Image (tube, rainbow, N blue to C red; front, side):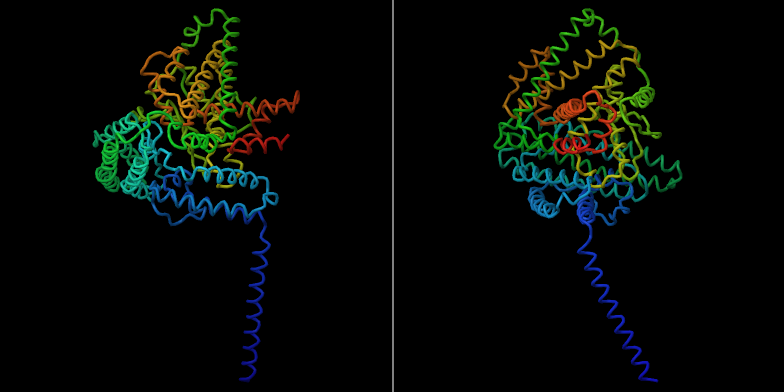
Length: 590
């Protein structure tokens, strides 16, 4: 009996060994024959996770439920601007490029081929300027980190109590983050690449203004409003609300305000070390860095000379169109102000009209939940006339368009602005692509030229819609449209002139005066904005021109069979991408 049991046990062990061996073989077999798409998606999913985990603000604004994407334990961080982090980033990028090159794009699905092409172009472009990171400028009076951060914190959504804790941790991390920025600016100073005193003074003034009234600072007042709302919804008790408000005030006083004061002090110390008050072209390797910005930020890979030629041709065309329009409508210049001075219409009515009327030119998209809010008075000064707050990709809501009452705009301007931000602009494009079930990594591949170019492209079309809705003559709206195009084209040419051709303030003033802009303070503000934000205007206008060029290309291919709605549908389905990639996959659809 004993021997029988021993024999049976050996058989069981032998069976287990066979099973274990079979398991190993099966695992190896599975690993060897996992599909190319699955392997590629493992790579992009990991890239997505790493990208978002490194910055809590980006994570919060991108995902409402990060744990569903495998992002569980996360270190609270705003990132790192130290020179060492840029060097590490360069090495990491080389490894990613090597890994990407191990995939065969022809074996991937169409969606993964698009991602492959975007990443291939992005990695190569970023590495081309990886050694020139000190030419980057994280600070700026308009689009700098110190200007944008308070607004992002003020709009930080509290979906759970954990979000409040993360928010507090973010506030506590600001001193370390700002110290890394100071180190970065100090390194720029040592290399003779520090900003001009004019730029420094604008940032210093902004920082000092931000910390002037600590008790009534908008971060504090807006936090109170959000906490009180949670209390009203019975998500937290009155005692918890009071505790949160006290803790928030403590963090503002001990972490946030001292960080802004420190930044102002350090910039004051570094003043005088900046050797350039003009554009990038006056700095070593500045012209090549500007070319990199156009590729990386705009997604246009043509030479600057080609782009400049295109802009001049457009400007001449606009001039001829204005001349022709004025000849056909002699009374237009005099009647324009009177005709366009229509009574202001509620934003909700404009958006409802746009949502309905665009269906003849754009593919159907049902959007039931969106809201118009007004920018809190405390941040009117720092906000755009209007903006759309992009929702997380896993919820695609809330969808909120903010209107800034502090900006003086006419009703036609409000109409076209809402087309840019709402339908068929940012809100529409974001939701349309969001419903394509694209890979999460697409949300990290910003492609600003596509995003802003699309919104400007459809804003241009909205002037036709406005004529009907506002009962303004098509000729008047066309005149306003051309005027807008001329302004954007001119600013884009100035952008290239300042950063590639070396134009100074005198040269820019002379050009602006030829277009009727003669006030010195206005000329200076335009010049300074472009100096501080290289290639920013190009995201909008050059992006717009690329979409117009694609439309013309497809019109020529299709002839009488051209379908505008189909064109828009194809562009939207491909989604945000550099323009060479967008063009490649768009042409495949025809």
